[in-house]
Image (spheres, rainbow, N blue to C red):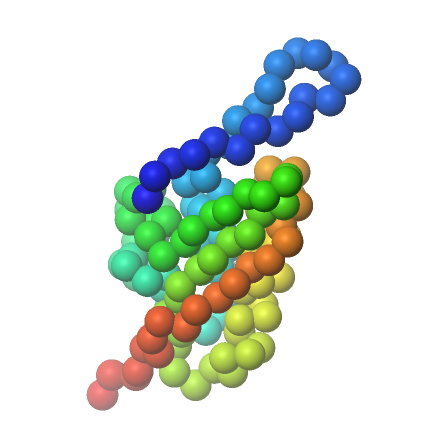
Length: 124
């Protein structure tokens, strides 16, 4: 994933600017989605227990961030656990990702688009 920077306006303080790499926004989105019950993993990542130890590139695989006129659109590809309601789980992911990204970055999240890549079937 090619990394671009999102520049935040510094307001009237005149101290300088803040730039946030797209990969940082993608990482926040990936970690937020992993907190939702029923989400097995992001496409291309390993299990949630190991997310804290995995490299940034691996963690953000399956997440794409777009910025258009200070509005952020996040595209995610996720793997869900079998037995969970897809609409309810996706709605929770969208709400969690939007809230986390907006709270941590100050950006406005316009859309969180989710693609269900797979369903993790129970073993046994």
